[in-house]
Every structure is written in structure tokens, then in C-alpha cells.
Image (cartoon, rainbow over all chains, first blue to last red; front, side, top):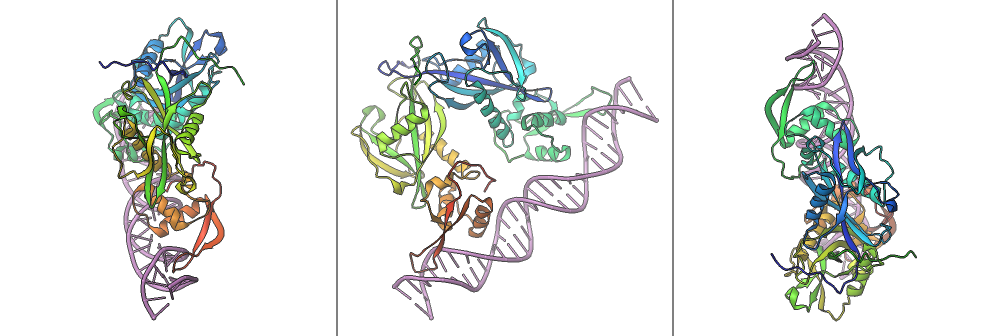
Length: 226
Length: 226
DNA sequence: CCAAAAGTGTTTTTTTTACACCCATGT
DNA sequence: ACATGGGTGTAAAAAAAACACTTTTGG
């Protein structure tokens, strides 16, 4: 491993990472928040975050912080924006590079550290009081996801491996916050070629069973818009 | 002014800003580069950049650095991405938040400092050898501008206050790197309502004079796509 | 046989693309 | 009068939107 040294002569801001973790829960786009015990945040809900280590890339910091503070191992991670207002953190000058993570919430048991009193999913339309500038970060993440779901396959990270077309449509409706036409949605999503039949059928309720589908690839790809 | 203190306990990366300055010159999308004297950059061309001060926002750093190193006062500035690879800068651990600036190159007299031997515009299709990870940054800026010109009024910053429709079309062609149909372009851009007639006519060469137009507003706005 | 969600095509409207000639000027 | 870039409309093709009934199952 290459030697990396801190530039001692530079006196500058500290650098942190904050992560907006996003899932679609019961048809609602939701964000994972921690309730802090720190009085300086006004005992508000905040995003999981932490400082960037000297030997870590920003992506690695995001992964580490999210795992440490929520017990989530990330499915999809993308850098969002770097917030650098001088007074954004009352504790001192901290610049924060924000990320968003997309997860299937059913896959993880949430678990946080002693620095926080609670960990909880909140629908983005019913957020609690948020500390620091974290609400701004969340809003930006929502906008990014809302745009990106229309021209990429990122929705794959919000679902289990196999799913029905109705489930997939519900994801899109949750993210876009509007109803879509079933027939048009199916035609379009199938024509994109990003999903294919998985073979099985889902027998669940007193109705016709739904065909199961899966994504051709979970690798990020851009496609023509929805 | 509020007191801002450095978080002394945190040992982390230094934070810098790099700026990709973009103009459309002779129908070519171009980037402004500096030739460094620093042997560690291999005497290559690099982006103007500098460290973030304790009392500065990132946007302010970008403006200051660009003014100091190129004598350009920015027209339009937008944050691009934060690059945090551990070994991206051979001099030590430096995380860099990149920006891109859009300018009308005719407005400024380029002027750099003694740390650099040259300052020059390069067409993005004919870049010289670039130092550090700066080529990656430039590529990302180009992609961003290319996307954004299609659904916003950012092109206004690449032109003088008044311009002909042909000039505007040339900007779009330079950014998108393809020819557009004159009639379709005019219909679309006029229907968007972001520009209006300025009244005058441009008498220049031995041909019919062109009508002058101007942007309704230079404030950033998103519109329906081109 | 009833309730519930799955599945399926066609028509209309809107948007996009392709395309060729006349106009106003300076020399 | 001619060379040069400015300016204009229409038709065909493609994409998007609107819309309602039949199917399969469990109870």
C-alpha cells in the first residue's frame, strides 16, 4: 500500500460523509434516520454520518459509516453533493459529502450505536424535525432518485431478487409520488429489456397469481426514459 | 460573523476545489487549463484549483481560485462531484470538490500567476496530457453540461447578452457535438419561451441580416427538453 | 358464485423528425 | 447579378396517453 500523508501545512475544514438511506416501504418512499443524544443537534433526527479517514476513499467512508451506525450493508451507493456552508454544523467547520443508498429494507435488521437513542424509517412525505442541514440533503437525494429512476435500472435495488410487475410499478409510484397506468407501464418496462420473466408465479391471495420477474442485470445502466 | 473553529481533533484529508472552466470557442467546446511548473504533476496541464479556507464556502473557494489563477470572474458556477481517491494527488491526501464554470470567453483577459507557465483554452476533443485525475474531472463536466443544456437555460452563460439564433444553435452544436436541424431548432427554442427578440439586427457580411435575441432571464431554470 | 388482483390491445393525441426554397443584404 | 447566410411550413413517423374488459385464483 502506498504511503499517504496528511498535508500538515493546510489548515482547513474537517471532512465528513452523510448517507441518505432510501427504501420503498408500504408504497412509501422512506428515509432512515437516527435520533441523536447530542444536545447540539437539538435532539433531532439526523442522517448517519462520520468523518473521512486518512486512508479511506469517500465511498468507503460512506459504507463504513452506514454499517457502523445502522448495520446496513449497502446495495447501491451514489455520491450526491458536497455541502460546505461555513455554519452548517454548529460544532465547527465541517464539510460533508453526502451519499444516497438504495436498499431493500426487508434485508436488514436495524441496529445503531450508543450515540443514538433510536433508529427508524420515515416516509419522505412525513419527516420529523431534522437536525443541521440534513433536511436539505434528504430533499436533494429524493430529487436525484426521482429523476434517475426514469432513465436507469436503479429500481432493482429497492426490490427483492424476484418480484411481480405490480410490485415494480408500486416502487415507481412511490418514488415518483404519482399513479401510473398499468398497461402503459408494463409495455414500457418490458420493452426496455432491463427485466425478464423469472418463471415462477406468486400464489398469495384469493386472486389470479402474478408472474415473477427479475432484472437482467443489477449493474448500473442507463436506458430510455419512462 | 459567527465564530468558526477548526475541529482540531480530527485528522483527515485536506480539502481542495478544482474548477473546469468551459466556453464555446469557434464552434468548439473548450476548457481552460494551466501549465504547471510543479515537477510532481509531470509538467502537465492542470485545472485551476486551491485549498478551501476555514471561513469560505466551497462556492466561494471556487470563485476565488478561478479569479486568482485565471482572472475570470464567474458567470455560472455549479458543483460537479467530489473526488476522494486516496492516491489522486501525489503530494498527499487531498479530496477535491470540483466545479464547472460557464463563461463567455470574449469577456476576459486571461492572466495567471507565477506558479504556472501558461494559460490556454483547449477544445475538449483535443486535450493535451492532463495531470493528476483532472481529465476524469473534465470528462464529467462535459457530460454534465451536455445533459443540462437540453433541459435548462444554462446556454445563456456561453453567449453575449444579445445573439442571433444561428449563434445560439452553434452553442448547442458545440456542446452536443452534433449538427441540429435549423428549422426544428428554432421552433423548439422559441416555443420554450426562454429567449425573446432583442429588436436589433446584425449587419455583418454580404447577406441578409440576422435578428437579435436575448434570454428572458439568466436565472437558472429548467425547461422541457431539447 | 363472488371478490380480488392479474393480465391484455387499440385508438387518439402529441411530439419528433425530415426536408427545400425564398429573402435581404454587400460587393 | 451573384454569393452568402437568414428565415420559414408541412407532412410523415414515432412516441405517449387514454381507456375497459376478461382471466385466474381462494374462499
